[in-house]
Length: 104
Image (cartoon, rainbow, N blue to C red; front, top):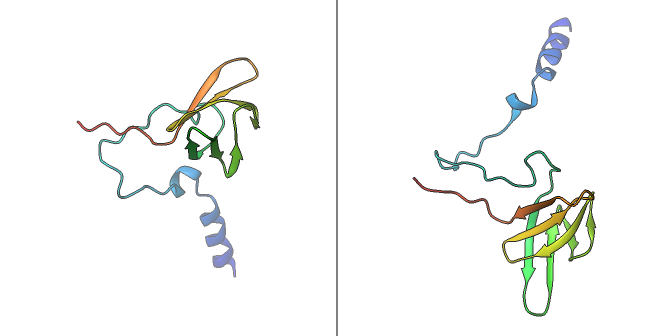
C-alpha cells in the first residue's frame, strides 16, 4: 500500500515539458514561425473560407467573420491563408493557417 502511494506521488510530479509529445514526422530543421501563439493568446486558426461571395474563419472551433470578437481580439481581416486580429491597444496579430517550413 505504501509502495503504491509512493509510485503515484512520483508519477504526478512530472512537469509539462517532460510529458510533451514530439511529432516524429517533423523535419529535423523545423523552425516555428512567429505567430499569435508567441507571447499572446493560444488561439489556433483552423480553417479559412475566402471567396468572392463569403469570408469566414474558424478559430478554436468558433466560426467568425470580420468585425467579430474572439476573446480579447477583434477580427480585422480574413485572407485565404491568414487572419489579422487587433487587440484593444491597437496592436495587430496575424494567425497563419500554415506554418512556414524553410528547407536548407
